[in-house]
Amino acid sequence: MDYAKEYEQKLVTADEAVKIIKSGDWVDYGWCNGTVDALDKALAKRTDELTDINLRGGILLKLPAVFEREDAGEHFTWNSWHMSGIERKLINRGCAYYAPIRYSELPRYYRDSATPDDVAMLQVTPMDKHGYFNFGPNASHLMAVCETAKKIIVEVNQNMPRCLGGFENGIHISQVDFIVEGENPPIAEMGAGGAPTDVDIAVAKLIVEEIPNGACLQLGIGGMPNTVGSMIAESDLKDLGVHTEMYVDAFVDIAKAGKINGSKKNIDRFRQAYAFGCGTKKMYDYIDNNPELLSAPVNYTNDIRSISALDNFISINNAVDLDLFGQINAESAGVKQISGAGGQLDFVLGAYLSNGGKSFICCSSTFKTKDGQLKSRIVPTLAPGSIVTDTRANTHYVVTEYGKVNLKGLSAWQRAEALISIAHPDFRDELIAEADKLKIWRRSNK
Image (tube, rainbow, N blue to C red; front, side):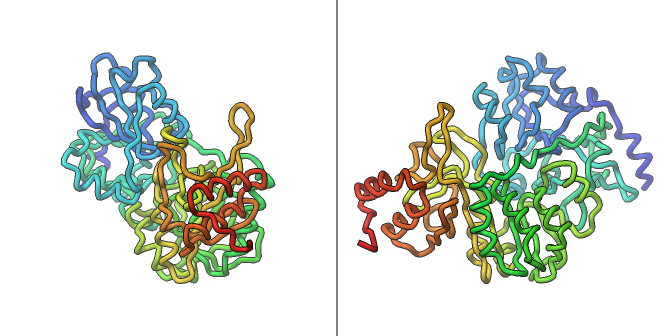
C-alpha cells in the first residue's frame, strides 16, 4: 500500500472535515492536550447551523472555540470525563456536565456503548513510514474511541510528542476517514505550580521516609505530589520504577537524577508506564521518542491487577477534604464538581494489594476561603452533596503537615482519634466534640 497516496486522498481542510457533523451528533474531541484545535475552530464557524451537538472529552487546557459565544450552550454541550478549571466555568454557564466514571472503565464503556460516537476528532503526530499516527501522550482510551466511532478525523500537529513503547497508542491510516493538517500550535501545557510551601515540604517528608529502594511510584496531580517528586529526586533512593495514570514533570526530575531504572519492577521491567501525560514542555521533550517510556491504555495502567502485580507500589494522591469516618472526597466542593473520580480509587485498592504497597492521601490540614476564613480539611462528616472518591473501607494512609496515620483496620473511634491527631490544633477540640456527638469518640489515653 502506498501510504503517501492514501494520505493525499484523505487530506482535507478542517472546514471540509467538519461538514460530516450534523445536529444531534455525539462528537469526541480528543483528550487533554490532544483536544482538537483547527477542527474546533472550523466547527465553531458552523454554530448557527447546528443544535444539540454533544461533545466528549476531558481536562481541557484552553477554552474550545465552540464555547466562545455567549449562546454556545444552545448549540453545544460539553460532557467531561474529568474536569479542569475551564470546564468548571463551563458548568456555571450551563454548557458542561461531568460524566461520573472510574477512568479505568473508559475503554470498556466505549466498546460496550449502545450509542457510539458519530464522529471522533483528535490531534495526532505526523504519520510515520508504516502509516501510523501516534496519539501523543494520550493513549488513555483513544483506541477504544476510534474502534467504535462511525467516522474518524485526525488533526496532525508536528509539535505533538511521539509516545512509544506500549500498545493502543496510535491509529493506522487505513482506519482514518479524513486527515487535517492543523496550524501546529504548541502542545498545551499544565504548569508545574509555584514553589512548594512549608506545608507541602512537611507532608512530602513524611511520605518520602516511607518509600523503600526499588519502589514503584504513582503520583497524582498537584503541588504536594510534585513536591514529593522533587524530594525523591534529591534523596538517596534508587532503583525506582514508574507505573502511573498521569505522567507529570516530577517524574522527569526523578529520572534525570538517576533514581529511576525500573529494574525491580515485576512487570514492564525497565519501563515507565503511563496512560497520559500532561505538564510543561520539559516533560513533553522528555517523553518524545523515549524508548524507556511505555504509553498504554488506561484500562491497563489503572487495572488493579496491574498495580497489585508490582511490589512495593507507592501511590500518592490529593484530597479536597475528608471526614472522621475516613471517607475521602477528592473531586468536589459539596455539589460543585472540581475534577473527577479519575483513577485514585484504583490506585488506593491496587497499592494495598501490592506486596509491601502503600497508598497515601495527602492534604494540608486547613484552607482559606475567599473571605479569608481558615477552615479544616478534616471535618466531622462530609458536606451534603460531597462525593466520596475513596470509601472509608479502602483508605490506607492519610498525611497532613501534622503527621501521618494508617487507617486500615481501625474501628470508628480509633479512626476519629487518629485523624484528629493530624488535624490543625485550632480545630481539634471542635472535632472531638463533634466526634462525641457522632458516638465515635473514645480517647484511648484517658
